[in-house]
Figure 1 (cartoon, rainbow, N blue to C red):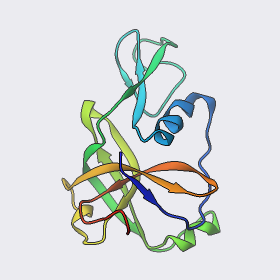
Figure 2: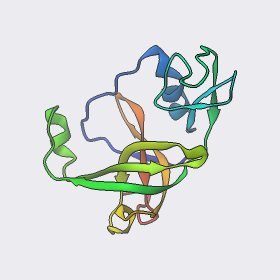
Figure 3: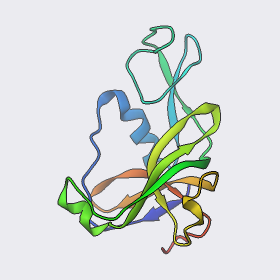
Length: 146
Protein backbone atom coordinates (compact mmCIF):
# COMPACT_ATOMS: atom_id res chain seq x y z
CA UNK A 1 0.00 0.00 0.00
CA UNK A 2 1.06 3.55 -0.64
CA UNK A 3 2.51 5.42 2.36
CA UNK A 4 1.69 9.08 2.95
CA UNK A 5 3.50 11.09 5.61
CA UNK A 6 1.47 13.40 7.86
CA UNK A 7 3.43 14.79 10.81
CA UNK A 8 0.63 16.91 12.27
CA UNK A 9 -0.15 15.90 15.85
CA UNK A 10 -3.00 13.44 16.30
CA UNK A 11 -4.27 11.12 18.98
CA UNK A 12 -2.99 7.55 18.75
CA UNK A 13 -5.44 4.72 18.06
CA UNK A 14 -6.34 2.35 20.86
CA UNK A 15 -4.59 -0.90 19.99
CA UNK A 16 -6.24 -3.85 21.71
CA UNK A 17 -4.74 -7.37 21.54
CA UNK A 18 -7.73 -8.48 19.43
CA UNK A 19 -6.95 -5.82 16.80
CA UNK A 20 -3.14 -6.04 16.95
CA UNK A 21 -2.92 -7.98 13.66
CA UNK A 22 -4.60 -5.11 11.80
CA UNK A 23 -2.14 -2.51 13.15
CA UNK A 24 0.89 -4.72 12.52
CA UNK A 25 -0.23 -5.26 8.92
CA UNK A 26 -0.41 -1.48 8.38
CA UNK A 27 3.15 -1.09 9.71
CA UNK A 28 4.20 -3.58 6.99
CA UNK A 29 2.23 -1.67 4.34
CA UNK A 30 -0.54 -4.26 4.03
CA UNK A 31 -4.27 -4.32 4.72
CA UNK A 32 -5.21 -7.49 6.59
CA UNK A 33 -8.49 -8.29 8.30
CA UNK A 34 -9.72 -11.16 10.45
CA UNK A 35 -11.25 -14.17 8.74
CA UNK A 36 -12.75 -17.07 10.65
CA UNK A 37 -10.82 -20.26 9.92
CA UNK A 38 -13.84 -22.42 10.80
CA UNK A 39 -16.45 -20.90 8.46
CA UNK A 40 -14.47 -18.36 6.35
CA UNK A 41 -16.55 -15.37 7.52
CA UNK A 42 -14.75 -12.02 7.35
CA UNK A 43 -14.82 -10.34 10.77
CA UNK A 44 -14.97 -6.56 10.78
CA UNK A 45 -15.11 -4.95 13.17
CA UNK A 46 -12.56 -7.33 14.60
CA UNK A 47 -13.84 -9.65 17.27
CA UNK A 48 -12.54 -12.44 19.51
CA UNK A 49 -15.47 -14.66 18.38
CA UNK A 50 -17.00 -15.25 14.95
CA UNK A 51 -20.50 -13.76 14.77
CA UNK A 52 -21.63 -16.57 12.44
CA UNK A 53 -20.28 -19.80 13.98
CA UNK A 54 -18.94 -18.64 17.39
CA UNK A 55 -15.45 -19.98 16.68
CA UNK A 56 -12.51 -18.30 18.39
CA UNK A 57 -10.16 -19.28 15.55
CA UNK A 58 -9.16 -16.77 12.89
CA UNK A 59 -6.35 -15.70 10.57
CA UNK A 60 -5.30 -12.23 9.42
CA UNK A 61 -5.82 -12.36 5.64
CA UNK A 62 -4.90 -9.76 3.00
CA UNK A 63 -7.61 -7.60 1.47
CA UNK A 64 -7.23 -5.49 -1.65
CA UNK A 65 -6.82 -1.79 -0.82
CA UNK A 66 -9.09 -0.82 -3.76
CA UNK A 67 -12.51 0.46 -2.78
CA UNK A 68 -15.41 2.75 -3.58
CA UNK A 69 -16.89 5.48 -1.43
CA UNK A 70 -20.28 4.55 0.04
CA UNK A 71 -20.73 7.80 1.99
CA UNK A 72 -18.55 10.76 2.93
CA UNK A 73 -18.80 13.88 5.05
CA UNK A 74 -16.53 16.87 5.59
CA UNK A 75 -15.72 17.54 9.23
CA UNK A 76 -15.34 21.29 9.56
CA UNK A 77 -14.93 21.51 13.33
CA UNK A 78 -13.02 18.86 15.22
CA UNK A 79 -14.44 17.68 18.53
CA UNK A 80 -12.96 15.43 21.15
CA UNK A 81 -9.19 15.51 21.32
CA UNK A 82 -7.91 19.05 20.55
CA UNK A 83 -5.16 17.59 18.33
CA UNK A 84 -7.78 16.95 15.61
CA UNK A 85 -8.14 20.73 15.23
CA UNK A 86 -4.93 20.80 13.16
CA UNK A 87 -6.60 18.45 10.63
CA UNK A 88 -9.96 20.23 10.20
CA UNK A 89 -11.50 20.46 7.77
CA UNK A 90 -11.08 16.82 6.75
CA UNK A 91 -13.17 14.21 4.99
CA UNK A 92 -14.31 11.03 6.62
CA UNK A 93 -16.42 8.24 5.23
CA UNK A 94 -17.33 4.63 4.70
CA UNK A 95 -15.63 2.68 1.89
CA UNK A 96 -16.79 -0.57 0.30
CA UNK A 97 -14.02 -3.14 -0.27
CA UNK A 98 -14.04 -6.66 -1.68
CA UNK A 99 -15.83 -9.47 0.21
CA UNK A 100 -18.70 -7.08 1.10
CA UNK A 101 -16.45 -5.41 3.66
CA UNK A 102 -17.20 -1.81 4.60
CA UNK A 103 -14.52 0.18 6.45
CA UNK A 104 -14.56 3.67 7.95
CA UNK A 105 -11.71 6.13 7.54
CA UNK A 106 -10.44 9.53 6.53
CA UNK A 107 -10.69 10.21 2.82
CA UNK A 108 -7.80 12.18 1.36
CA UNK A 109 -8.98 14.23 -1.62
CA UNK A 110 -8.03 17.66 -2.94
CA UNK A 111 -10.46 17.86 -5.89
CA UNK A 112 -13.76 16.92 -4.23
CA UNK A 113 -14.52 14.08 -6.65
CA UNK A 114 -13.25 11.49 -4.17
CA UNK A 115 -16.09 12.34 -1.80
CA UNK A 116 -18.82 11.31 -4.23
CA UNK A 117 -20.68 8.02 -3.77
CA UNK A 118 -19.03 5.40 -6.00
CA UNK A 119 -15.70 7.24 -6.31
CA UNK A 120 -12.67 4.96 -6.55
CA UNK A 121 -10.23 5.22 -3.64
CA UNK A 122 -7.30 3.20 -2.32
CA UNK A 123 -6.47 2.36 1.28
CA UNK A 124 -3.18 4.03 2.22
CA UNK A 125 -0.96 4.05 5.28
CA UNK A 126 -0.54 7.40 7.03
CA UNK A 127 2.80 7.60 8.80
CA UNK A 128 3.97 10.09 11.39
CA UNK A 129 7.06 10.17 13.56
CA UNK A 130 6.25 9.12 17.09
CA UNK A 131 2.82 7.70 16.19
CA UNK A 132 1.61 4.29 15.01
CA UNK A 133 0.69 3.98 11.34
CA UNK A 134 -3.01 4.44 10.61
CA UNK A 135 -5.16 3.69 7.58
CA UNK A 136 -6.92 6.25 5.41
CA UNK A 137 -8.33 6.21 1.89
CA UNK A 138 -6.85 8.26 -0.93
CA UNK A 139 -8.42 9.50 -4.16
CA UNK A 140 -6.26 9.59 -7.33
CA UNK A 141 -5.91 13.39 -7.07
CA UNK A 142 -3.66 13.05 -3.98
CA UNK A 143 0.06 12.75 -4.63
CA UNK A 144 2.67 11.43 -2.22
CA UNK A 145 3.61 15.01 -1.37
CA UNK A 146 0.12 16.27 -0.43
